[in-house]
Length: 308
Image (tube, rainbow, N blue to C red):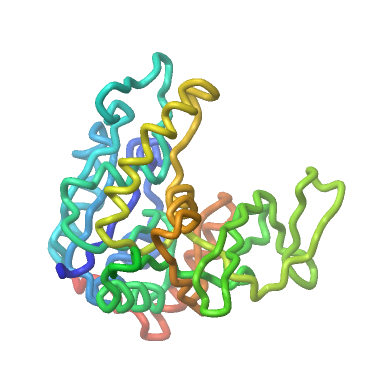
């Protein structure tokens, strides 16, 4: 079995950061959040990273991120293109939006040759998370009974912000910690004593324990995921092109749920006690900067990160 590779979904970075010219550093020597993810992944054993980007930001991405990280990892690129669809399907006129996270992963299907982990480009996951997913992928190939996948779950209390509501996938597990479903809660607030969520725009609120396990889009798959997702894409498009052709998205967890329901895959829910950090709101950035620099001062990360 080939060694696991890391797939980084970064196709949305150009629109969020104005062509990558306004990337905000979080480290004292100009490091970005993605630098810390690559550092942690490399320490965990990953040797290859695949960046999924838009082709139009290729040069800017390489100059801002890729060329630097290619000094410490093998770097591959894949382009998410809304016109990259199965034979017989075309992108509807007027659609500018990408086709979602499962489609982003499929963009890398020609440069992935074995098991792989998937992360967002602008989230901090912590070192334990990469160790957990790399170890699991290395030791659990697919079997005759089905596909062996994994995800890293986080404690909800370690993922909320004081600056507004967040959306989280609440994980449901069986007694052996295999995923049974992910329930999307789109409006979760930190709350005074524990996080809480609403489904009716704040008319009523429901508590969620702080130790509730949630998904932060850190998944681990065998190569089979790519084959299954590509096979499911036509069915998704048949519905999407009728119901919501300009905005419908082919989400990564949707494919997972379909495979679980069909009995073709199981997903081990690994656990991380690391705190997740991301800049959901502009006001989050000072907290993220302080946290990352605090970890560096504690000796978790060298300064500068890449020894230059």
